[in-house]
Length: 442
Image (cartoon, rainbow, N blue to C red; front, side, top):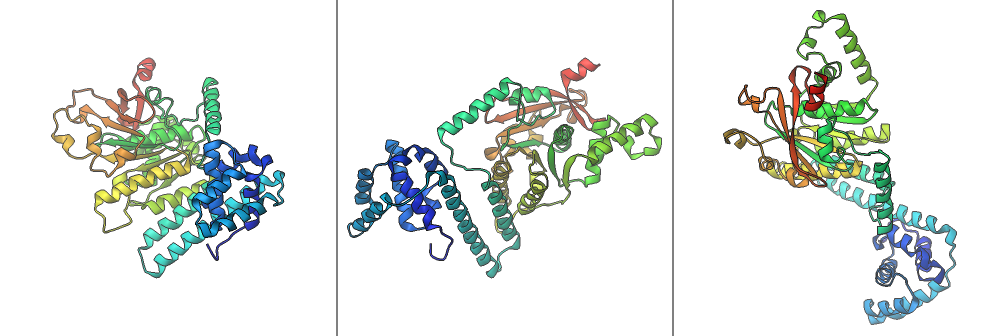
């Protein structure tokens, strides 16, 4: 691509290493960390593509095989020049100790070209007066992905994957888990320890079944352990969410918190301790009533820049997330939002939990127990989600039926079991608790 950043010396050095006898042992590293598209010069792209194909087929690259591929791929009038280039590469000076530098240079220049191309696209949209929300989303997505690109290579060979899995097994054997605990042991057991990095989790329920309380309890459990959490609280102000968290942490009736003058001294002490813990925690709250995907990406990027990591993102709830294209139907908007949220989870390498209303057909059904099909009015969220959890409070329909209990239904679990369990819902404390644990305390 003319006019774009290029480092021809690094590109020719890599090709020279790949076709040299002493460079054969480095082919796994080179073909894993670089792709043909990382090269800029068209001929270099073709040569490296030949190298990758030969290595994949034979696990080595020799000159005769390269010549055969040139004859097969290049027009006859260009074959002589291509072979002459390879002959020159055989005599090109390179230093194996500089291999990492060659690779880094090529990847860095490729990233710069990508930025320029993306910015040119954004500039075209600006010149054509396209929607600013969409442009802002493009900018934030580019920034987030470039940040992650400096740390991760998406192409991993089997050897690296096996080693990574072996490390996971060793950590599990030693009792070390990277999963994010839900705060409910019974639920963690079904989920295999909790939520995994990169997972998109949808929590669905009808109105007043405890979605916000359920996910805020998970946030509280994590920040007490030093986790970094961001909550997009679309329905309530940040101060009201803090009130719920104080009630959960201090075990003080949420209603009584509205009348601080009537509280006992011991209760005030518990409240102050809870407030101090929350004040010193790494909890971030976005109280925008209708955030866009661009705003969500932007604020996640801000938090990650400040804290260098995010352990959990909660969006409460998906129906209040704004779309970017007013020409789309709401179903199409929610489908795109669902896909973007899955991308967000993967880019941040942390669980993203999104709550969702269920369609009204639940109310017409005998028994009122929800199923995953009740999410179908929510775009593609049921397809994109790695875990789908539904909450069911029978007492909402019959006060005598399972009072104070909630059925937690795991309808989808991409990497584990599905099923259901019963949890205690302590409404006065806005708190979910393990049923067995509570019975033991009593």
